[in-house]
Length: 173
Image 1 (tube, helix red, strand yellow):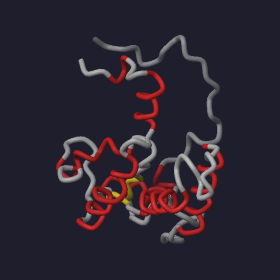
Image 2 (cartoon, helix red, strand yellow; image 1 turned 180 degrees about the vertical axis):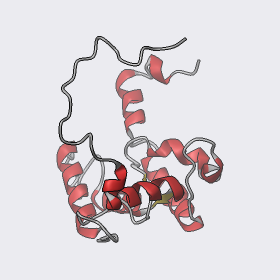
Image 3 (cartoon, one colour; image 1 turned 180 degrees about the horizontal axis):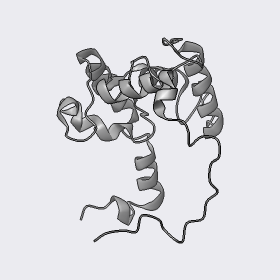
């Protein structure tokens, strides 16, 4: 099977200004791209540690005074704490200061989202065929013993399971 080189159904305007450039014309971007293809990503413990610590100290369902949290307020307060306690990093050749992880090429784990999905893979992450990532012994212990146990019943998947009675998308086939 062979596709046409030009799809007659696609309409576009020719780009008069950028077609003359290649990645070679942007050495900083090229360097960042090269790093992404040559450096193995590493799991970053910063966000899961900080978010978990804040929730353990301030509550999840109820605040310190026993009042139910408004989820948006809880999330905003946790985010504020994260931003106030995150390690400030400016990498070489950055045009914009700041990073999402403490690693050169980092993997962010959102424990309140689907982060717990990698729990069973902590020992095998570096050896996966698709999307392998290194993880330090210290990070593995933190995530396994401190972070994921707290979030095991407090993540999106579990919320959907409780709200919708284990919908079809969550049933084993």
